[in-house]
Image (cartoon, rainbow, N blue to C red; front, side):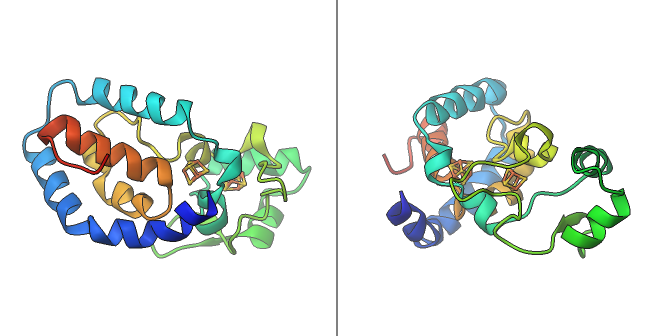
Length: 168
Ligand code: SF4
Ligand code: SF4
């Protein structure tokens, strides 16, 4: 798995221009059944993906922490919300609370999430490949292609489904 993760930024770079064009076209001409296609591709990919052997998302990028996430996690640790924020988070240029450091402080040595039951909504939904109106989050997806092997595979398969392109 580590070889795949290490190679992913290069592979993402190779298909970057093609993907930009693909998502541009997808936004202009969106198949009516895109939500259904994404659900199928997402389920197929994650049925054979072992996230515990990867955890590259948790190691390299921060989820957004909503107010509800902060309230839930602070309660879990019996901390005051402002203490939790000052210890772990900062307010980024997009006005979101994100982690101060990577890998995530709550990632265990075995790649288990130590706050799994109260993890942020963004973690529960990552990498958003089953999101409705998937074409509207292409900027996020373009970033995730270089981080998440499953997202890379799903987008390659989506290109095959929509226009017969992509790497198998
Ligand atoms: S909170 Fe858990 S799932 Fe979210 S980034 Fe940290 S370790 Fe990963
Ligand atoms: S969601 Fe993607 S990056 Fe995160 S652990 Fe699973 S395969 Fe790896």
